[in-house]
Length: 353
Ligand SMILES: Nc1ncnc2c1ncn2[C@@H]1O[C@H](COP(=O)(O)OP(=O)(O)OP(=O)(O)O)[C@@H](O)[C@H]1O
Ligand code: SF4
Ligand SMILES: [Mg+2]
Image 1 (cartoon, rainbow, N blue to C red):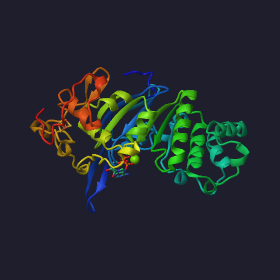
Image 2: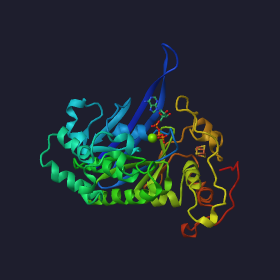
Image 3: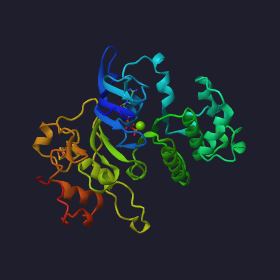
């Protein structure tokens, strides 16, 4: 355990109880044994399809829910089951930025009141200058132009900046940003990401950045963790993970990213076949096996552990080493010369690793 990490997550689980009859409930394993660390000043990007458990994991780390099992440490202190009354210090240090800035802001409050509110709750003085500084930090300037406006008078990008100013005002050290740019207009996305990136450096913030979008995850993250049906299936430095994936699911996610080159707009994107199975009844063995083109008998029988395949690179696949060239081709449609690997044709639907 490295106590220097801002957030340390150990074998954490969130099993929701889902009602199936008047007296019967069954567990839905939204998060099913995740171990991760977020060092100070770094971003861990969490990517995966809808329903893979990203938001549940993010909320667990903020103790917005109490985990079913596992441990959470914030700056070396265990917070897993600490009662709310004794978490006030943690509430100042750990914040969340939500996907929908319209839903997360009170429509009847002005920008000034929205950004100031956490200071009132925590009884912090010098509020006016702090609000000014927070709005300047998110580039809502001149501040006088924005301070008396209501959320409906702002664009989606401006609203999200107000939400960011509100999270910053308590001077946190850890932020979970859950799809922070997916609901704002495309033209504002880059500037909001740039603001987050700059603030992170300025305040040495540790981030979990949650997204479906592998492309922005790469831009914003130091390390990436790929989540599938409640588990981490691959984790590595962002550039390495995207340039040479070691898990078939990661390769398929990368292949599904739209090509930004307009000349390739008619090229058909590869999509991941099938739907993710239900976390109520996950498949035995490797959870990805019903959708994996490389599945072999062992994949149906034995669950692959998340293991260190190369130094600093973790993957949960029985065949990560053998599949490296195939995965490169699957993800990028070619073999990268700089990787030193030779070009090979894709091996089709039923390779024999
Ligand atoms: N409060 C809840 N009660 C029961 N099931 C829940 C609850 N919240 C989430 N789930 C289920 O847990 C699983 C994981 O959901 P979660 O919202 O964490 O996924 P996600 O990766 O954030 O998805 P998305 O990308 O769509 O936001 C899903 O199957 C979801 O239906
Ligand atoms: S363990 Fe088998 S089924 Fe799972 S990702 Fe690897 S090859 Fe595919
Ligand atoms: Mg979510």
